[in-house]
Structure formats: C-alpha cells, structure tokens
Length: 251
Image (cartoon, rainbow, N blue to C red; front, side, top):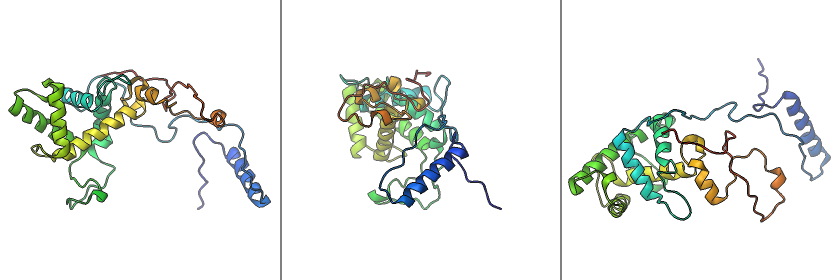
C-alpha cells in the first residue's frame, strides 16, 4: 500500500506541488537560474517536535546546596565584566538544572551499552556515567574536598580560591572521589557555555544577554529583506525561537 507523501508543518499539498512543478520546469529548460518562491508557507514554531521546556519555579534536579555550588562555578567560568553579566545572573545554572531534569540528564537518547573503556581523544567521552550521575557525584566530591581543605563548601570560598580549584580540576591535578576531575570540569564547562548562548526558552541566556552582546538577531523566520545589506548593522532586537523577545527567570 502506497503512503501519501509527507509535507512540512503548515505547508499545503497545493503549495508543494506548485513549487515542485516550478523547480522541474527550471531544470528542463537548462537555464542556470534559481527559482524564486514567493510568499511564505503557514508556519508555527515546533509544530512537529516541540522542545522540552519547563515553566515552573524552583530547582527541578539540584538540591539547594548543589544549586549554590553550580551557581558559584558558572559565575567563575563566566564572570561579570563590562560586556555582560556573569554566568549565574545569565541563568546558566537554571539551564543546566532544566537539562538534567529532562532526557539529557538520563542520556536516554545515547547508546548506553558497554564495555566502557578509556578511549582516544578522537573517540570522545567513554564514561559510563550519565550527566545526572556526573553532577551528583562531582558536586558532592567537590564540596567534600573543600570542606576538608578549607573548612567550608565551594560556594563560600573566595573567588581566587574558587578559580584555583577549578584550574586544578581542569588540569587533573586535583582528584575527586568517584569521578574523574577533568571529566567533571569539562561537563560543567560545556553546559555553562550552552546555557549562556542557547535560546532563552531553555532557561539560560537571560534577557538574551549573550545574543545582545554578540549582535545576534536570534531565530527569525525570514532574513530575505536583509540579504543585500552587506556590512551594515541591522540593529535587530533578538527573537527567541518561540517568537518572544526575552525570557524571565522562574527560579
């Protein structure tokens, strides 16, 4: 039994047939000219595959102590300066919390069978730990280490001491109980950068701070009217992929 061909969300079969006929005609003519498709099809964000988002207050995965530690870490990885606010105020910890509460945290979309053996750098991450396990183990081990060495949790240390510890984790000079220190540092560094630059609907990039800093206009549907404006500032207000201009913290 033949199945009907699928169309894009919001695109009618009549539009698809019209565009396909125009493209075939251009190919048969042999003319080296592009087909101009006038008008935009009806479209709404994520009609087929909506993103995993959360619209509720509070921490979903982190405990209060874990959240305080993560906020302190992201604020040292992206400290506030003349260009932007720091990682905490930008919502990076909120982004990480939301990701860990969803399918990313359990790694359910990744291949999870062994054997788990150390690989080459080109082979990527070979750890059996899910992101949730890495954060839960790594944060507990980090605070245990600082309480032993400094008598207080990581979040209560001075900025200089926090920087020194993070550098030691990055280089592997300081060991953590239950998890490779370099693996833990790379995990939280990568997620912090994702939270700073990702679309605000995921909890980070608060008020589109990183997009405004870079001059990135956001996820606009159509840029055709700006294509010919070479080397000119567009001065466009960033737009989220859900069509809203900014995100407000719920945490």
